[in-house]
Image (tube, rainbow, N blue to C red; front, side):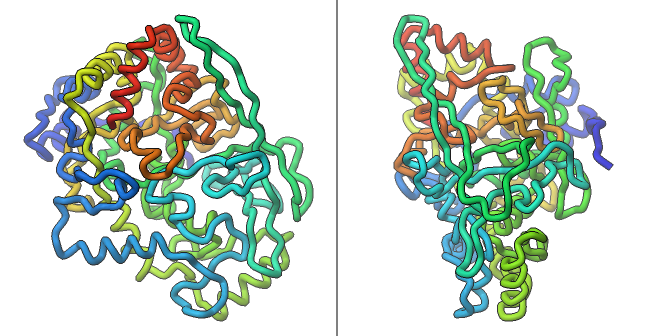
Length: 480
C-alpha cells in the first residue's frame, strides 16, 4: 500500500544520526535542523573529505581521495564497466545482452565523462543522451506512472537487427521573448514532442510524455547517505512556516527492499537507491536484465522482440548484466570524488554567494547536508559534511516547467531540487551548455528564468537585479 503519512523523526533521533557522525558540524537536537544546516559555513570542499582537485574533461572521473588504496582497482574496474559498449551478438557472454530494443549501448553514451546529457543538436537529429518517458492516466501496482500499452514507460528508439525500434521522438522548439528589469532582452525556448515511425500502433490520445536528459553521476553515494529522517525534517509540504516553500518527500517504490521508500534520484526523486536507479537504467536504456530486474521489457505486441529475447537468454544467459560486473559499477558510482569549488575567494564569487543567500535560493538548493553514520554506508562517506546545494525534495516549479506527468507523489508540476555541485563544469565535461530536465536552458541564467511556482518570487528578484549583480550571482554558481 502506498504510504502517504510522513515518517515522524524526533529531534533526538536526528541528533544521534548527525551529531555523532561528525565533529565538524554540531547539531542541537532542540533546534530546527533546516536552520542549523543553513547556518553552516560553506567551504570550497564541496564533497567534504571526498573532494578532489580534478578539473577539465575528467573532472567527474576520480576516486574519492579518502577511499582506501585497496579500493582503487575495484573503482577502475567499475569505471570500465560503466564505459563498456554492450553488444547483442554472442562474442563474449559477459559483454553481450544488449536489447532487443534500447536507447543506447553504454552507460557513458548518456553520461559522457559522468556528466549530464543534452537534447538533439537540431530538429530530427539523433537523441544521443536524452529519452522520452511515457505514461497514461492512472498508476501501476506500486502507485507509479501507468505504462502505455504496446510501448511501456519509455520509448526505445533503437533495436537489434530483426526487431523494429518502437519509434522516434522529435523535439521542436518555440522561442519565448522576455526582458530583464533593466530592459536587457532574452529568449527562452520551450520544447514540444511529436512522434514518427511508431512500430506498434498509435499512442493513446491521453498519453503523457516527458523528455529527460541524463543527469550527472557524481556525489550519488553522499546523497544516498543523507538520513531519511533528515529529509522528512527538512520537508514542509503544507508550508507550515509560511515562507512560500513547500518541499516534500516523494515516496516511491523501492525494488531493492520491496517496499515504498524515500525517493532521492531521478528528476522527480522517483527512485530510492543507486542500485535501483542503475539497474532500471540498464533495463530501460540498454534492454539489459539484471538480478534486480530479470525480465525483458518486450511488450506483448512486440513479438519479434519476445522471440529475440528468448533466444538471447538461451545463448547469453540471465541475467545479462551479471552481478560480477554490476556490483563493482555501483561501488564506482558511490565513490566518485567531487571537484573543489573554484575561485572561492574571488570577490565577485563572494558577492554572488551573498546574493544567492539573500534572494533565498538556499531554501531549496540547501548548501549543506550531513551523511549518516550507519554501517550500511561506505566508510569514506560516513559522517561527511558536504555541499550539494539540494534538499532532495520535490517542489512545485510552476506551469512553465510542468510536464503534466505525475510520478508517485510528485505531481506534473513538481521536480526534485537539482544539486548544483559541478554546475560550472558542464561545458568542461560535455562541451555544451544545456540545463534543466529536458535541456531547454542554454545557460544558467535561462535555467533560473524558467523557475516558477514556489521559486517565482526568487526568479523575479533575479530578473530585476542590475546586470552587475546578475553576473555576480552567475559567477558564484559557475564556481561550483
